[in-house]
Image (tube, rainbow, N blue to C red):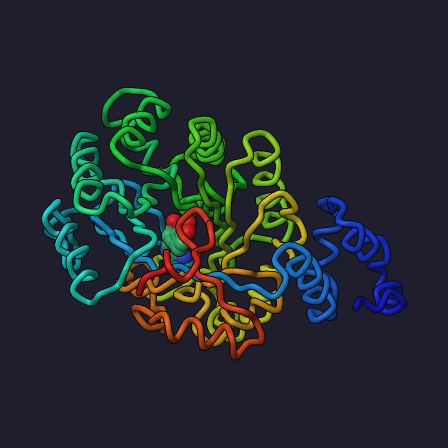
Length: 377
Ligand code: V47
């Protein structure tokens, strides 16, 4: 129950009324939520919205991540994962057989995967045909396993290497078995800041255009925002509004994932006070504001790898409705100092969701919920 008198005292009457009536908030209202001194008041609005959409449910997925390479031409200054060349310490590039071996590991652990999440750096020379063959090999080995792969940034890179359009790249990958795309590489859309932190990566317009192209082909996608680095609250709100606008046009974003910047091994240096677990409240607030601004995106993910295993379940009370999944192997966050485990078991995910006061619901990559018979363990 929202205390309307309290929201009036905070100067948030009209926002509270809009949230109760499920109406769209303006960018100025998004900023007011970032500036509100009482974070629990912002969280309660987001919780109201989240429960209206999903009730008491909190989703998770039995998935595996595979990073096929960390060799990348982009050189984004925040990234601890990336290596410049194959022979740099810590560089890796998988073959198709390595990808299949990782799938067999899940089999031998008797884990029935409902999502395979494949992403990597923008490798300087690996051709699109390799990715088609890899998808086809995975599809042959596991015909029922939904493959969520390649961010819009990778799609832009494949198109550049091949000299073809991004739409043609997407069509070829879809034919080879791609059903869904993850939301990475959005970083922050503001052009001035983007040109500082990731000057060589596909720009904001390209990232949004490629997402729209995927949607037009029936490939649903996710979206993200990297925050907690140099960006202002205005730039966060601008980012959320650009995602909302794209979703109005193309409608295929399933889930938004706010990614708090992890600072270890990064060339992007921040002042001490902007680093570490004391940023937790800002992370919860950002999740809450995202839930309230992104009225046309159904799910908000509290990605436990980046948020940490303590804060991610708390985020379920601040507008998030999904924890992502079992993961099994993760590099991007861990190379940047993530303190979280490499993976969580189904039992651990269900336990943490129940302990947080929500009902665990197992889903697949496209957020279809699975009943017990489908959700074999
Ligand atoms: O694109 C890179 C970000 C993304 C750091 O769509 C960092 O379901 C924090 O997008 N600190 C990859 N973040 C992860 C990602 C993702 C993860 C889980 C699920 C889904 C989904 C998407 O991580 C990158 C970049 O935006 N990133 N370095 C860092 N140091």
